[in-house]
Length: 286
Image (cartoon, rainbow, N blue to C red; front, top):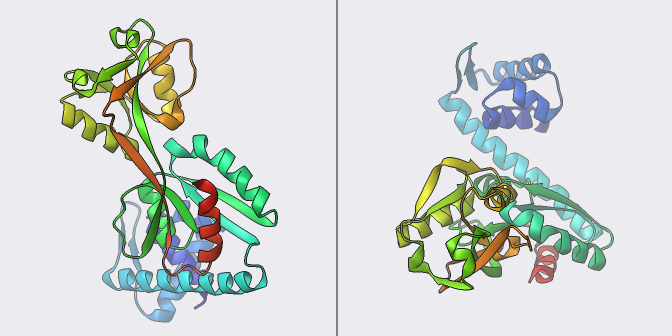
């Protein structure tokens, strides 16, 4: 049994599919299956139950996978300790961000990191918040930009910025003629929102519930840029965070009195050996 074997079973458990897992670990599916079978034979138990239709993790397998995740995480920490001693402000840093902030915030942020730490290699991971938290706790990323608050005793969070929401409307919409509206004016309005899994969708739904607006259930966008184009073409209205506001001849961005807002934070593991570097990088984001 070695670290490679542990990585294989963890990846299969995450993907719940041998074919997808084999792609993630860059081996063929037969080779992956054979290696896991060898591990099961060595341990004398089945980690997985599988046939053509079903995939299950056995009770023993679940315990083994939990321990394997810890071992893999600790092995990465050992590597990071060595790297940190050799070059505290060099090597690699893996930064996560969710889609509704990544494309608007990261370009300038990364440029500032490169200026201060020219020897640092930066890897960017864009994913939804739940996936970012998993990657953070699994040691796959060093820190991540995530909407606050997050309740996780293993993580430390630092506020980066807060931003208000504006109402994005097509030109000619009744609201487009106003510079500001009262939030209560959104009552009974139909808003286009992002699809499930986006934290911005959850925030928008909270606002809708609060003011008694409702969602346009005929359409859910995959990105803010899709929402923007839908508004520009007269398909409806939406809430847009300040960071995503762009001048557009077809869209009016209307301010809201006592506007709802979201707060973006940077989260990293309490146990991280790269805290000093991460804290210096976070300063560049504020």
